[in-house]
Structures are given as structure tokens and as C-alpha cells.
Image (cartoon, rainbow, N blue to C red; front, side, top):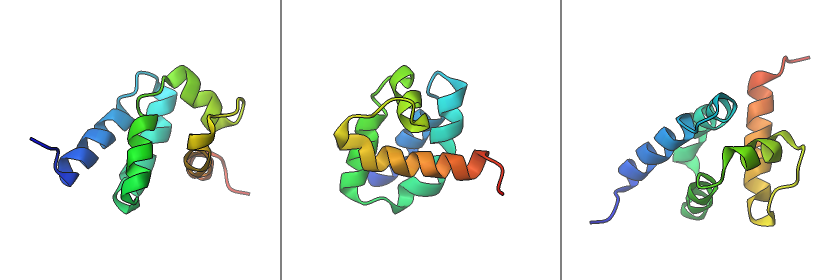
Length: 91
């Protein structure tokens, strides 16, 4: 039995909010709530693959302290921009 689109989004949101580190929960959870429904199938596939990565790798990629693998660069940039806009004070 294959996963329905609704079940897939629900699973991905759950995995985004329950990462294992609070920092990544607070970055990926809100991103998934606001952005997943608007992503195209290839972007969803890439995000699903990103969810398999370790938080110890993800956080430095999103925060920009370490370069990320090329296949994730556009997605990580989008997530990082979203997180900075949400969590940094506006000037």
C-alpha cells in the first residue's frame, strides 16, 4: 500500500517537529507547517531525504557554519532564510 499525499505530509511534519534536538525542532517544525503544502513533488522528495540527515549535520548547514551537500543547497538556504526571518529581531 502506498502512502497518500496527505499521510506523507503528516509524516513529514511529525518528523520535522520531533527531530531529537530542540534547535532543529524549532527550525524545521515551523518551516514544515508553513511550507510543505506548497512544495512541488521533487522538492518534497528532497525534503524527505533531508529529514534522514542527522541533526548534528543539519544545524551547522542551516546556520551557515558548515557547507551543506550540493543537492541540499537551495533547500537549506530557503530553510535558513525562513528561520532567520522568524527568530531574529527585525531591524
